[in-house]
Image (cartoon, helix red, strand yellow):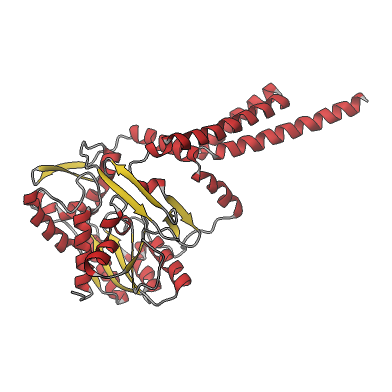
Length: 403
């Protein structure tokens, strides 16, 4: 009888330990810390489990799970999660297997944005607060309604998505309101790989009866090569674990971790220059982009291959300059190198797609507005403001000969 009792207790202990480990493993998925931190914490927890026994281990695991669930509810209910974010972009980030990064579909969301991305990351002491509203369609792009056969589809990153601008200021809204040109916004932060993925997904869903205008940003679109692999297809386990990233606890703890990393960084901060009588901030990565004298190579970036894939529907390419290039004439008399434009123009010519540089139009409007102390970019941000988006919309109309 004692042998049976010991055997039962042994199996029960093993079961308790297994359940405790399963529970704590799931609890760890709620927290947005690096895997190495979670693995280290898990090893310490296993040692603690062996020390306190199976029953207490199970009780501790259940307690941690309940604490995490209560914490998740509390962070969401109190608005603590949203207090970490200075713009809707991070709050509404979503993912679709075919399109990749999008915003939360069928959503209208408004908030007060206290400052831009340069101030958020570099603390330059410049803040231009403004109200900002996002409205998304059924896929998760910033459109007032679902796609209904518009002939023109604008594809690009945060400039076309308008991450720091309210809905009425984004390029597609300028086109709709001021030029009676109904276009579809297929913009979301990304790179050439994601642009191709997005266009392919759009073609698969709606066919080829549209023309895509592709906008390529000088600042970071040339940082990553095109691989042709598209959106990675994750297995069931990977998709399961990624689902926890939408929880309030994960978002909150991940944001705290990123802020702690940033506070320990010794990188040189952004540059601030007085232009038109007011301080204007410039992102350090953009400074590196405009200061590049090394020609970009096709055997590294593979943009020709990317453009060949989407050529059937892409009819125009637009080059978006960095803020520093637009305001360079007020900062340094020396001409800036322009290797990103040179490479993209050559790639577009090889593929046979017309390409247009938005730099002259933005520079001209920047000069016109300076006496009024107005700008085409936010002074505390890397992105266009409403003025800059208006210029881009006007150039699209001009290029398409619709004036």
